[in-house]
Image (cartoon, rainbow, N blue to C red; front, side):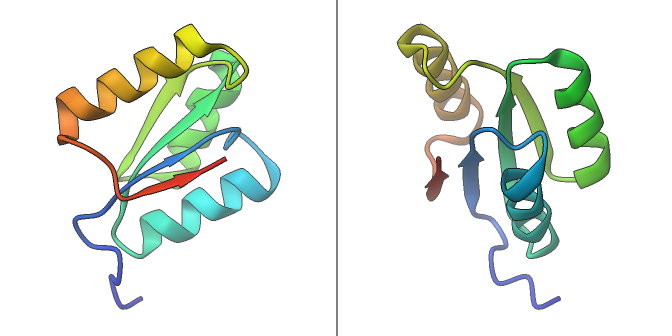
Amino acid sequence: MANRLQNKIAVITGATSGIGLSTAKLFAAEGARVYITGRRKAALDKAVAEIGQGAVGVQADSSSNADLDKLFAQVKAEQGGLNALIV
């Protein structure tokens, strides 16, 4: 891969399966640091392991404003901001 997303930060919600997980894998393969969310810890941990290096799992419900506030606070604290949000 060409690492077109090297040094980019992406948040991908609902990325423990399906289109979200596939998107996270593609972003990570292109060099992005991906923060993925999911409600179930076991599924989240499995998805992070599948994605591999560059993936961070954050247990969150994307319908909860409090969870989203915590998610974005974590990303800001760890990365300074983000480049892509996929919902």
